[in-house]
Image 1 (cartoon, rainbow, N blue to C red):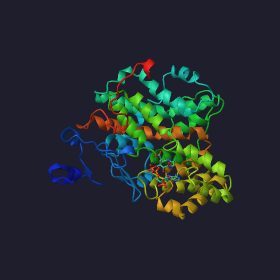
Image 2 (tube, protein in one colour):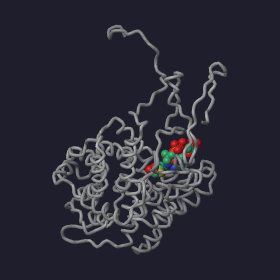
Image 3 (cartoon, rainbow, N blue to C red):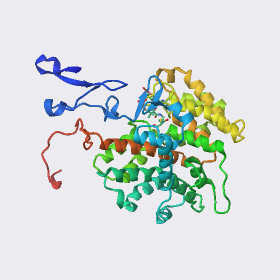
Image 4 (cartoon, rainbow, N blue to C red):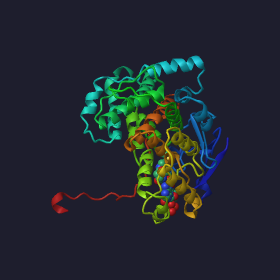
Length: 428
Ligand code: CMC
């Protein structure tokens, strides 16, 4: 077994060895679990820059090479060749499904898409102008009130049903959040349609008019869902894992994950990118905008990533899809796409971005596609949440097979007052 030798204060008498763990791919990890119990020391790593928080077999990222794989399969192969539900199955159960497994899984998800009728009253309690993410956080957490029959997390069958319910109902809940905000009636799921078509149908149909979803749009939606399906231990996934380490129910935990995703440094960036492109307004204003970034007045949204120090492979696929989708739906000369491409070109040749290894991430091009599809900007992060639900659920499920799983309880480097003498209020 490999070990790392730690010498405290340069004193060999205070030296000890810690085991080094070897993954199938990626950097090795020093196992510090005994550090406090045996040596009364903590590690200190705010933001988890160098900390592995769990063992996982689901997703592998090599940030330096721009590689993303799910269960060993390259993201590009999955995005080009699979349906979203095939990828869901892969993430949840570890293997790509055969035809029968896929048909059964598709049937199960399709027949869990409807939500309890009572949920519409929850929606009706929100102001019409609510941000759809505010509604979604509440709606998903509220599912724990509707599904008492699947809250026993020690039962693998109940966990599986909860997983199916979450994946199946997220599009319905997301579409309902949108319909509510524009004052239109909710549209029920249609079991004749596939996952992506059904979602677009629930968004765009009205009781007065059926809505024929263009195959190109359904294909683009399928691809976008796959590209967002999982991304190992990011902020929202770690939130789900930490929340569920206390054995909280899955609906509450996914609600916590959605809350974390909402932030502009994470999934909320897709909405911010479009606002940024609108603010820039014209290619001619890019140099001025870039100067503002360098002066640290604001960040270039959709750029940079904690793990990728190379082109985000998801952004590469989406960039290709942008031209395709815009052409298919007849949008010629998209001003936003032109600004985005020029912004990328300038940023990638500018030393500020090059030296910090800042590249476009998944959020840089997704918004342009969403917008071309007619999806309103406030809904972008909900779509991310909808796609990522399977990743959260797969990671949550993986925790139950981990013998090392414990309640998550980080420690701290206390820098406050040492003990002080208490004084009653009249003497302060
Ligand atoms: N624009 C300008 N400068 C940036 C950016 C950016 N987007 N991102 C990082 N930097 C700079 C930062 O100012 C710092 O510079 P300096 O060394 O001079 O202080 C350096 O790069 C390192 O930044 P950091 O904040 O320490 O890096 P991080 O790994 O903690 O942050 C990030 C990662 C994604 C939060 C950050 O890159 C960011 O804020 N990006 C914009 C928001 C965004 O697009 N988020 C989506 C991430 S991908 C999808 C997802 O996870 O949801």
